[in-house]
Length: 153
Image 1 (cartoon, rainbow, N blue to C red):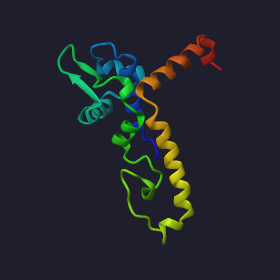
Image 2 (image 1 turned 60 degrees about the vertical axis):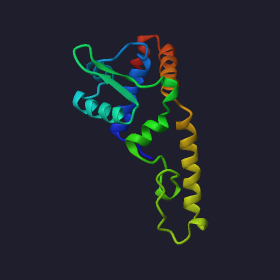
Image 3 (image 1 turned 135 degrees about the vertical axis):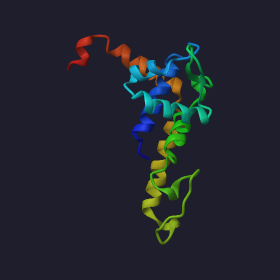
Image 4 (image 1 turned 45 degrees about the horizontal axis):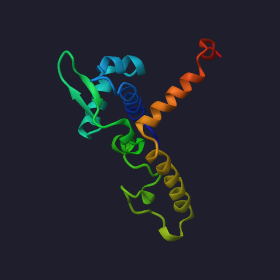
């Protein structure tokens, strides 16, 4: 699995929506500025996340986006699978997007065996980290860097 810029931006946008979950909606301009994401690209990503039921939107002057469910209920795995596709490093170890191997024998393939372990580790982490956990990690990191000079070094 390789996280594309689109995938990274999706997670960063959801981070903002998670941090501002108690607000009614967050304007796209706010997300764009907070995360330095080009507005047009962000619009496409948010529309994609909306079609997946991860976010919802309100139109108009007071419009914007919000998470469609509590941040605790949205796993990073679900988001990444929607944006990027399989979490598996090779198609023959994917549980949700399986594709037959080109090797002579899947059962005896050492590479497949290792890649299956890699997939299981990736899935275990991403399934257990929610948008809420991501937000908590950001808050924790920010609390450790209260001195503005820390960012200069």
